[in-house]
Length: 167
Image 1: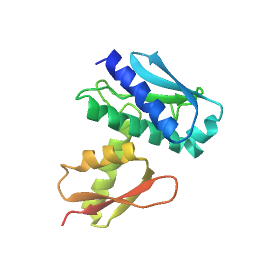
Image 2: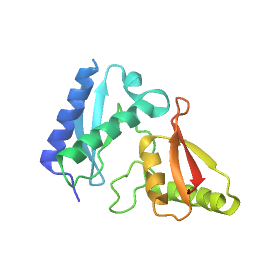
Image 3: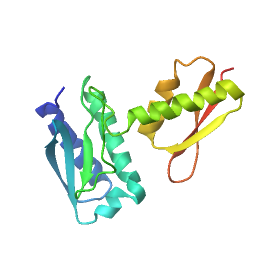
């Protein structure tokens, strides 16, 4: 599914508004990369928008997509780049809205950790992960018998997940 012109315009508007509210001056330009919308931000101070290890970029991207999901029932994931910087090269699965995370890798990590918890009965901490990555793991293990997931506060790199035996 391609992003519509209305969704693109809304994304540009939301991103411009977010940046303006935070006191950043940046130009927001749409780009098409392999049929996916990427909003390219041009700024005098890109480092302040990207953050250490791309954490601010991830946060902006997540907030933007949350707003778009509330405005439109169906909308592909919109990626951000700031002065040519994208957090990582992304390999989405066909039809997966969460194209900013390596879903298959995270699902594998989640299932492996769940097997350890089921086998040994001891909780397993994994992470740190950003919000989108944590969601993939929570959703992967949601239907798994015998285990539950919980998010823990962690350092500035992200929150950790604990996989525990179900009560």
